[in-house]
Image (cartoon, rainbow, N blue to C red):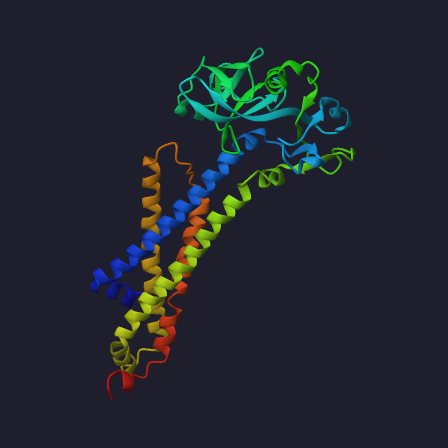
Length: 355
């Protein structure tokens, strides 16, 4: 470690360049991990708010809430500790000045799906809604009257709640009567028992329903089947994994070039009785020091950048994940020193010093 640190101090510019590259790679990895977490939360925030264990949909729906259609009477066949009905539809909401894709959730006020109101009040009658507070950044406010692309009904925002987006769209919460009016219009009276799914809190999922037309789906499985969720997550994760490999290769090339340039010096040191293992461990220690400094700087730069990002950027930094990725980066960078170790072991002192 002493030899490694002394060389770093002597050749500051050379090792600063290597550290800078590791810092940029780690910064990109941390930022991508934050982007992956942020985009994932955009899709699942409203579902996580349920704190549910399963959701019951029709088997024909292919695990899609929007494609599932059932009757409230199906509750009679569900054996669970806690149940809550839900209706869902997608639309474009407008307050005349602004437009936004939204997801409307119809629910019963006295069931556990009812969100906590952070501003304003809860809905009390038809056509009143609680909105996700991200809509405030889009120019929507308490008291706004909303027109929907799929309905003649007009809704009024009476309250806001936090962290309520579903498939990247802000959620509007309303009672089931409002949901039926928006979805079915004049036929709402005949369709008043229509819902899309039943959300469940119960540890025993396999025995929830004996109806062959219904399917009890674990919440995590339901989330994984949200449109684009898995594909988006896999794409960003593969980019991160490729960056791990790239960082290892870059460090290996730099260290190999540096080692080749110092062959004569290593030859002299070997001739003086310094073992190959000592020299090899010095190179590995040197790489670890550079990787640690570069990763730490990348970590700090990511947190600073995150503090100045606008709310519209879907980035959410999970410190546990970032620390895990940081350890992997240091490990793969240190592993890049292996080629240099092989070169040091093969050095012949006599040939290296020109004997």
